[in-house]
Length: 127
Length: 127
DNA sequence: CAATGATATTCAGAATGTCGAATATGATTA
DNA sequence: TAATCATATTCGACATTCTGAATATCATTG
Image (tube, rainbow over all chains, first blue to last red; front, side, top):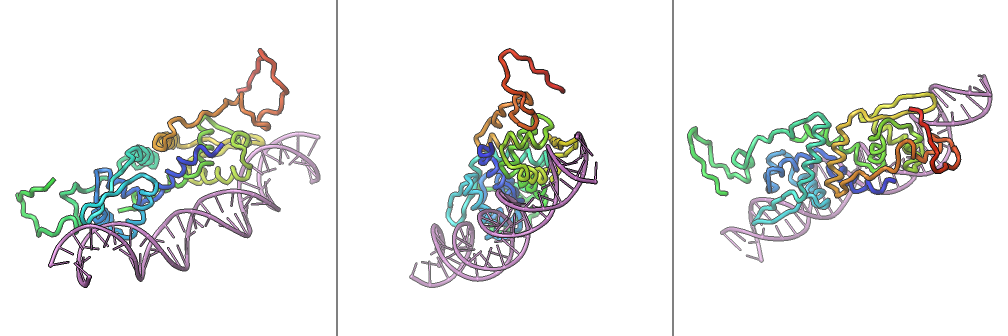
């Protein structure tokens, strides 16, 4: 019988897009706003929003508004297990290093340009 | 960037069909002929053949002819890791028990009807 | 309430996937 | 080589997905 495999196949289908994998990979480090994802992936905002909707409809992520921004987070961390397994199977052992933490994020919206940073300068991040 | 995720997304896409998951689940127990899969899943032969082609084109399975029959086997056992992860994530912990070994397989082609089996009867299987 | 910033939705054409029906292929046996 | 068995391929209708363009929504600020 085939029907019992439907839920798993549906989950695979949701994950079967490079943009969605990249988004989840970013969300792996915690809640992020859309503009952050936009800056990281250099994809159009509407495009990202569409993929976020797919992930949300699948129950994989949830959103939360804070002022102007919508913050997305992963609801089902088990998907990371699936992703790790596929990275291994596809011969891509490491999920790809994301060159950043919030501090190094080049997102022009998340970090309104503070000008060039001097060597030795101490930056205090609000947490 | 998104491109590095393409291979993983492609693998997900290949796995994103209940029939293909069911087929792989059967092949997990070792090489099997098409007629066996046909009998187990009660799906049309041409339909199964189409899905086997998808799996073969993806490099997940390989085929081998032996007389009349084509035997399929899994080339990349890592896919089972991916499947197990998705079963867990989809809340389907066990891959579904397959009611069989070759001995109990109801496949009418693999096991040309030997008639009813008496209690206590010893069946010798060629290996 | 008007303007603005962040994000979401709708629309449409192209591309791709699904799956049944019919038919083809290729090995084997008579 | 003709018949048969197991399996593969092709065709076609239909559904779904992808993705860019345009536009809408919604909270915030002035």
